[in-house]
Length: 264
Length: 264
Image (cartoon, rainbow over all chains, first blue to last red; front, side, top):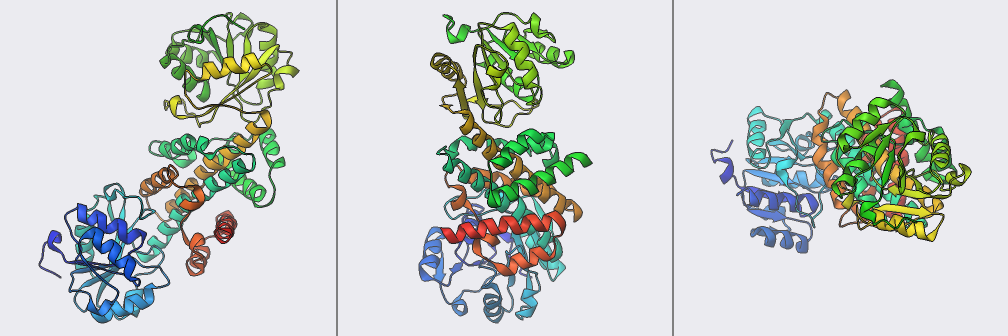
């Protein structure tokens, strides 16, 4: 383990996508300037490195020495990138940021010190993310490195948790439901309105309020609508206006809501 | 049509539930104090009337004269309440607030001047709603009353639209997807986390961000996750951990997201 303080840790960011970008900016704001950025494509590496005022490279072997190397590449690319990083870094702590990838991918790649640094959020390059509001889940093959990751993460947020690879898999599935699938519901609403020539913007206050409610009610307490009320007449009227996957999704989610309402 | 200014309109609120409460409070803030509140149950009528500093009653026949009577009762109760209101009020404009109920319910009830005042939002008694941010959809059997409803609504928000009963039905279905069904996705995430002993709160920044993104990206632009990326390995891993309706919903929504990603 490095004797440097966390603030002085030499950080390398591997990847230049949405997560890598938001993380780099957040680290910079926390006073931790990454040493270098790697990306497969030079344009991406240079774009992020410029933003962070650090070195850019497309060659893992030429990355500078580091204390913590944070990988934020696609799940598909991770096995190969992990292998190259394990060959380059014998002393640094190597971590990935993928919800669904077990920590052991590092052992398979031949890494010595490794772990996971999983920030629970949806990232877009174009939108800065306030890390102080989100949870970061860490895991490592050594207690000392787990502690180091906790200390490092605590520079970004005070919501730092340990999670095993098995727990993280469920966190990721839950995130798919809460984020990707709720967004799909917004998309279906947009489809239905578009067909009727109605503007989607009218949904925004409703969507904001639905999310905001969860800060003081559980999702099952916050549930409203015809399925929650058991209003069969309204549901039948809605169903008569839907077809295909919209009808199928209407039925299955309404059933879930009704069943839960009965259990309560 | 009344010669009074909108500010001096005599308003009666019929109902004392979530919508009636939020609307009453919003009207009061806009300087329009309702004359009276009716509810089937005395406790509810008195509770809201006290908050609005107006008269409470459980007897429709004894409601005071009014210019606009706003009904916010359950869809089931509406036909009977509409009949009683049509008998009580020959000159007032009678409107309901239900997304899925056609305007003609008033004609069936024998009303003379009638229409719809539909604020697009999810309402909870416990949480004040900022009406200036939401859209209100109006409809009436006369052009003059439609204009009156627009003028009245504009005291609450500048997002006032005309919508036919047919359009409003689709607005309501879209709202079910965007609000009730996205909340069901949050509930499923909470179920999955609870089973693993993980806290739901870690999802809140993710949920907030997912909603916030829609203010500058369309839902299909904002879509992320394994189904959007076509990441079959992650999806198979998720699927292996799900069963029953969770698995079924995972498949059908992932398919919707994948299909849309291909179309783009």
